[in-house]
Amino acid sequence: MKRVKSPAPTMKNNQLIAVLTGVFFLCALTTAYNTYRYHVSTHALLDMQGRAAYVDTVRPILESLLHDTIEYSKKNPAINPLLASVTNLPAAPTPAPAPAKTPAAKPSTK
Image (cartoon, rainbow, N blue to C red):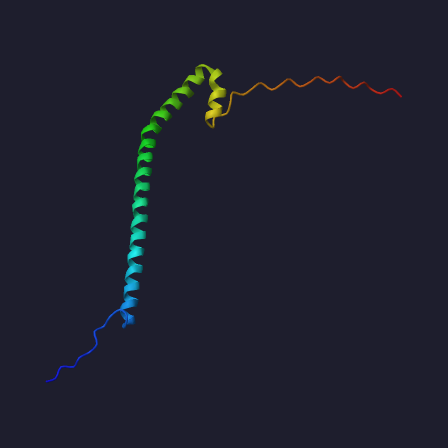
């Protein structure tokens, strides 16, 4: 039996190998880009979770301070303008000015 000699495939001769190599590098670059995006997103998520934990810790303290200040304002209404600038609470009502008196109309004499 005679051996049939075939030419060895090389990158210069075979277009399929060149196309597959290009696809491989394209996939590798896409994977590297997505890995970088995942890494950045994970760090951003961890940062936001830390901030959320801080807010969850501080919020009850600030709400307690606000409620205590509202209770204090019932005894000392001078603090109401300050509370109105910080909260939705209305400022202390200011007395309406008295209406100006108009002179009575004199009956006309004709």
